[in-house]
Structure formats: structure tokens, C-alpha cells
Image (cartoon, rainbow over all chains, first blue to last red; front, side):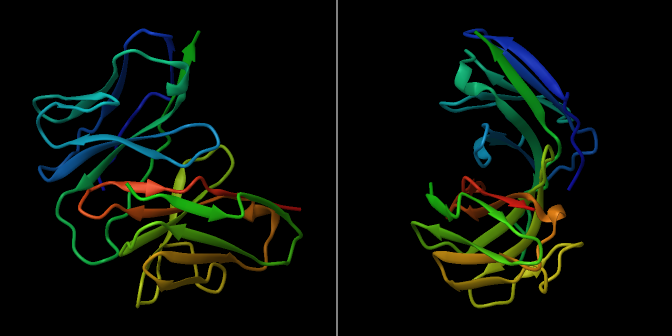
Length: 115
Length: 114
């Protein structure tokens, strides 16, 4: 899997938008960009993923650069519950075999939300 | 998405003993994964467990140390054998949601070895 680079930590004020960046300059044409987050004392949870176009769901938005070498996870209004480690992960859309759908986690960005 | 229950949620064990962690899923799944998260670190894949076949281990993990069972499509166990303090970690079970390119994780089993 191609490598991603994220800031170690970020801070945000509550109820303000948060933009979490991810660089992936070696991304291949078939890599999906996945975001997961891990709340304290919990397992990771899926947030959003996309290939080329920007994506929105109830949790967040994903903005993908035109050259796909970077992306940004956008939380529109941060709440205290959004304090977590956010992981940006690349996953090839083509996979074969029953055991090949693992994800490789980096260190992620620890988001702190200030009341 | 699938709901995963892991047992135990936490345990304190003595050096040299073994502990089996259970992972129960509320739906049938083909792919099941076991991850380890050492203190202050990110997640590392231990092995992939698919029903009806031997588990596939990642580099640095061996079956004698982390034997895995996958008796059916809703259940798996991971045993941490002959534990040492270096095995103190959170162990997480994960499944691939049917029809979706996403993983669902259990809450994890926090293991402390004294």
C-alpha cells in the first residue's frame, strides 16, 4: 500500500469546522482513500472513502485534490465527541483472494477539540 | 454494519500463561482480521482468519505464538501464548462488511502482562 503523511496532532474549537490533511504523493490510479477514526478506548470506526470525486456523508466530507496526491477530511462542526485519532489509509481497489482486504494503519492525526 | 463483541474487554495476566480472546459477530462474514495495538502505537495486522482455511499470518507473527481458530462465519478466537510483558497490548477483531469496502472493528481486548 502507498504511504500517507498526516500531521501528528491538531486542535479545533468546538462547533468550528476542522480540515484534516493527508498527503499521498505516491498514490496509484486504483487506490481508494479511506478515513477511519479511533475514539478513546474504542476500536477504529469507518468515516468515509473516495476515489476521485469529493464525497459527503452524515459524518464528514472528503475533498480530493485534482491530482489525487492529497486529500482533506472535513468535519463541518467539531464536537467534543469528535476528539479522536484520524487515520488516512490508501487501499487498492483491485484485490484478490479472501485474505487480501487488510488495511495498513499509520500513526494518524490526534484531533483535540477545545470546548 | 456488523456488530462485534469481544471478550474479555480487559485482563491482567501472569508471565508465561496464555489467554484466549473471543470475537463474536452478529452476522455471517467471510473475512475476519486480528490486529494488535501496542501502547501509544498504531494498529498492526496480526493475521487474517477465513472460515474453512488456515489463518494467514503477517511478517513477525507466528502461529505458535498467536494460534487462531475460525470455526464458523460468526466467531473467531485469538490465543496469546506464553505471554511476556511485551505482549501487553490491545487486541482488536475486525470484519469486512458484506458488500462494502469498509472494515468494522470490535472495541478491543486490553491485555496487561505482569
